[in-house]
Image (cartoon, rainbow, N blue to C red; front, side, top):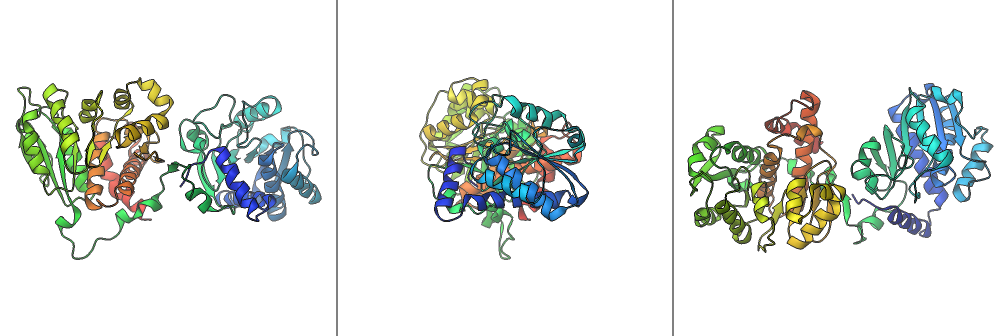
Length: 510
């Protein structure tokens, strides 16, 4: 699903209107979608005390149409409407909705009255996507009152919470906070990226008559939101005649003496994700510990340094092991020994199969831009991303999308930038935003699990790498959400993600 800027959304609306759908119909459809959400979520609406706060622009016009539909469809609900300024101030389609609201006999106030503060539902239609500067005056006051003046109310934003910058992850001025937001046609940047995505509440994306083809066909629209319909095939029933060779063979180079857990977690995650076979290649003195974690894993010893880390001398063996494998992964728990880094850089540049690059394998690439013949998928956290890009972690967090996209293009690799709203950036400049995840996943080993899940899914569908990457990231985040809901945010550990992965897959199949 494409993520649009305000200008891109206006262009979609303009083309739709030019094709023959009047703007007033789009506004009426938008109002209907909000009322539909309210009726489904807060039934019976006739028992609610509803306040609709409207600005002077098109967002306010949506609000006026919502108020009219509530009045005509759900009377005798207690309904109050407040409009900034005079009824004569709105123009165009918004003015038409002022006239229609007056025609059905609904009064409009120009302030938030004491009676309104008893509301059980507040519809925020004060400011929409057209703002270009921080809210001021009455609009800023109403935003403050939305946040503080309705103690018993749920706030439902029309399109986006008032004061929110549609095209940014954060805001310059005051911004309302919503329990839910109903937007239209496609999400905006503010809906998809933190911290604004935390202020929109539950997000509902509703069709109103604009053509989805106008979004899908435009190459300038390079930012998208991951949605399960992209990759639901990963949970489809398996062929009855399938065998373990049908689902790929994963090779994982990971671990070192004292760091065997990371290698084992990656291998187990690949198996739990459905790979038919998984081989973990690790430092010779670490092999027995890795094998003890899971009898289903195959293991191979690699030449090591005096400190028990994989050495450059292991490259010939790993290259031989890669023959016949579907996909490889490298990095978890391997350490920072110079010989290990040399091994990992050789692996990146020369291994002939797709390679997922995580943890110490990413650190080995800092300061290097290497070419590779096969697909490379790098999975940095913000600190690792900073080392790759030669900047600070704070700089990465300020502009995650641009930095991930730049590195993907520069390196000709897929970048999976982990964190809240994990990003998947492709070498052609497209970026996917993943909506699943939880702070509970900020625990040692979560990244090792993701590495294994990526490898496990790619092993099964090597001809559909884009969808498999998105599926792994989505399922990883969803397993975290389910685990946090069951165990709490503080108690979840990385291996719990594997416990909740089957439920996440069932969610995806539904």
